[in-house]
Image (spheres, rainbow, N blue to C red):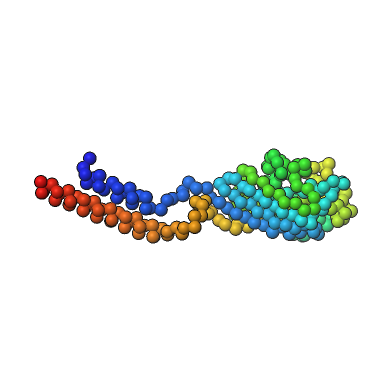
Length: 255
């Protein structure tokens, strides 16, 4: 290999090192938040957050003021991310049968159907919609779980149409007509177990931010600064290479 090529190699290597690193393969991070407001004349309220990296979602739900007991035991509150609707909580006018409460079925044109069941363990698909032994219970709770989110739910989150519903009304607060009805998805349970008590729309808080290196406390150079540093490095190394070539020629001529 010619010496001139050897001299140019360090310059090229330094120039490559000076260019900013790309993160094309880094997983994208998305954050969504919802304020859960009381619905169906309940006192339940809270907050929901969904943090997604790639296809992995960490869901946090905090609820207070929900009905505490159901048939003498802590009340299990089914909770879901609804998708495929208008992306809003169902209004009181959605009470199609006039029994004084908006059921999940009546609310579907607004909230959409169940995309993800926020269970405490096991399956998170719509098939677990009424898995009452795998939902948080009581009048107040904090739920957090990490799982793989399906493509349909992720798309609804990203386009702003995902809605969180927390279910399980106090039967005593329902009309006599509603108290006499059963849960359409689980006829062994009363309609009260299906009635939403808190609802919120998951709004994007941070969109498509690639995961980066840990914060070292050193401010990273901008892309223009990085290009300038790379150019300076190339010019500097080429100048050094040229000087070395000239020195070699002078040394050879003096022999």
